[in-house]
Length: 288
Image (cartoon, rainbow, N blue to C red; front, side):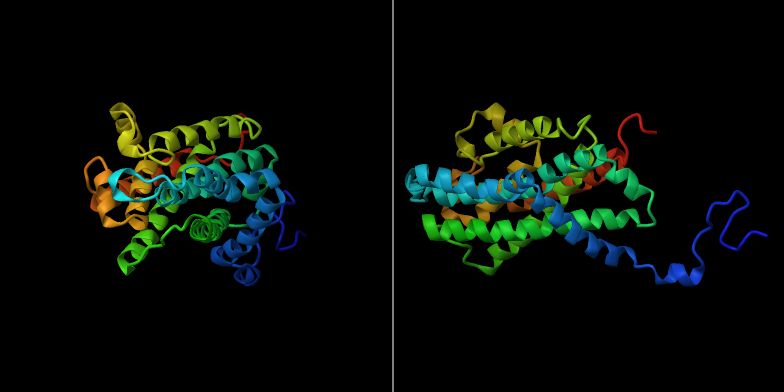
């Protein structure tokens, strides 16, 4: 006679209701996954450097070389302008680059396939990734601002409205680029080749979105290209946060256009959610 926990073919049935009720929910498992994701990130030195340290390295290098240069008649230093771009880029590094490179590597190692076969809700895996992205970004943001203030006399936002703008820009930026990272993680054919695909994309967007140069000084075709992507708008919003009001004359429209920034980022968040749902894969191509 077979036991209540076996099917006729000998495989185990679902756990009894009393046992299933004791299993942690997606939120509890997601919180546990955050710790796992953080440990995995910092054990991989290359990933940790490119995700967490690169924006700070660039801030120190560019700030040391160009930081004291003033931008036109505004009296604003390049360091003050550059910190906005580095914080926007930090969002891209911690979310999009981190996920678009790391997930293909996990897929190649069979980690995603094993997780898919466990009782763990899939939502817990994504919550772990989101938690890791958010915590790393908060740490990176604090370090970038500290470096800017200590080394280059960068002035932090002076009003509640600008701190509030920093909060919603960070939220929308992290959401958009995290979802895009999940979607794009299915593009590389292997984990080894992921960085060769992802890194050039980020560099092109940075150079055309006003991160390393004054956006208003870029060729018009380059400005139009960058305006199609969320980094340009995220960087523009961060300039509103970290630059004084008179710096709006440095923008193409002579305004930071914050309502338009919010609208574009919300639209990109919706689009990236659709892309992530449609493109994310647990298994490599050909694994079935």
